[in-house]
Length: 126
Ligand code: HEM
Ligand code: HEM
Image (cartoon, rainbow, N blue to C red; front, side):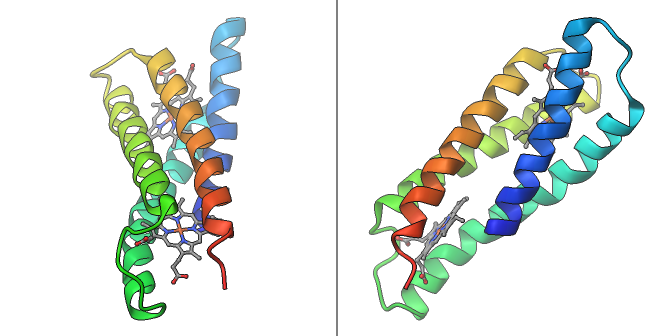
């Protein structure tokens, strides 16, 4: 989970570089877009896998009931926000949408939610 959150942060950093170039009206570096897309896909895929591993681990390794923690619900919200960011990002990539501001806003809220997931997950560590 730490690795996927780190990848998500690097994705955000590359995305914010694209955003500042767009807002300043200067040409964007093609490398930033390539880097953004290259990081975003594994980051989101790892978040999905990590989310699935959470309840498996909680039940099998800890003997808990699945989804009985606040962390589980914060994590579900976080995952939903990242998936929405990715779906919109994919539409931008394919030229089917121009909603860059919505993509950036979703990305920012998803990152804040991830910080809450980290906080609520940390206290569950053995
Ligand atoms: C599969 C997932 C994703 C895809 C395919 C994707 C795709 C894109 C594309 C194509 C752009 C350039 C938009 C343009 O100016 O034409 C962009 C911008 C951006 N992306 Fe993503 N993205 C994804 C996930 C993410 C994630 C996970 C984050 C952050 C947590 C993020 C944050 C941003 C930001 C901040 C921008 C700048 C938007 C702006 O110019 O205002 N993206 N993304
Ligand atoms: C680095 C940050 C995180 C830490 C330290 C953390 C830690 C934990 C811990 C200790 C557990 C209990 C399971 C066990 O110990 O066997 C857990 C469960 C879980 N985690 Fe995380 N987690 C983090 C981030 C996330 C994120 C970002 C997501 C979702 C995208 C997520 C989804 C889940 C889910 C769904 C469970 C199952 C909880 C339940 O069934 O009640 N976690 N996590």
